[in-house]
Length: 416
Ligand code: NIG
Ligand code: FE
Figure 1 (spheres, protein in one colour):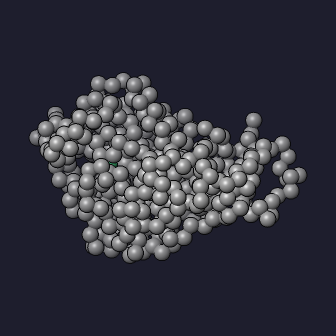
Figure 2 (cartoon, protein in one colour):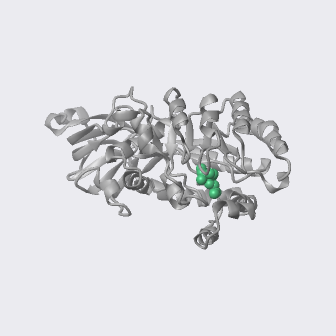
Figure 3 (tube, protein in one colour):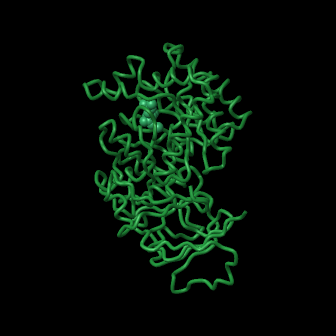
């Protein structure tokens, strides 16, 4: 049955935008259009209409619908999480304790831990097992307000294991629960077998993995970890260009642990986003000004690894739009809670609640080319939204860090 719902007495309908707005930049990030004391109509999984209660629609227009009273509660579009690694096996709790006891992320990797630890576990896991573990994480983040997601491979690092991860992502995508974008991240680290043959591994990515992935239509994007001990800016460009031949748009893990040229490589290759950005400098900000590439800050990873903070405030003040994503993964951010990312954005990066909400909805949707479909309350977009508990205003969400302020989540107009 096609669901038709009319929600009335919404204390504030937040992030209401015209269909033409696909991202917001600079000073415009401080604006968050809302309709206070609003109604919203859902029809057939989509946002059909909305307005002020002063102009509440005549009931004859909405025959056979369910009417819901939202008194005292806010509605926001679901978060768009444009950077995750939720397909993985087990966890890396042991390395967390190793870091507490003084080992660095680099030292753990040099011992065969880090990404290589996860790669070993993924190689031992079955596709079903990976799917089940990922679904637990997906359901958790949906409960926390996420309504669209990007998921990367990158813990495979062999033809067989990368394909296994991407098939799991495809299974999740095919559930049609929320929009999913799949990213091929074969260039996440050098597997042990290729320890002394980086060129050989890059050839494997380009000549074996990419054609198979393309033939099975398993990926939308191609990503590279551009960093010391991982892949250089030149290698990043080479891999992104190869991906392009198969129709895959680029993304880059850029400037996370050092300034290594990932932003420039991404911009030059027309990447849709460059992510992390702890060591982003003024020249990078200039490059990004003239690009369609969305700078994406991952506040949870900088927090969990105690990294210097990316210059998010400076980027917005320079006129850039920025996105936030969780980076949910077992090593650098074992959380996909976008509410917490917003709190970090306000407290650590001095962004306003309006700026972090824009970063976590319309701009992060743009960073995975979904902002025509999700990321705002817009007629014709998917009815993926959440209803808060009775709270004073949207600013309470980042303010009340660690509290769950979400009462219910709707996907395609259906309560979860
Ligand atoms: O986005 N930076 C590289 N990759 C992941 C972390 C990978 C891991 O430690 O498992 C990230 O932070
Ligand atoms: Fe990542």
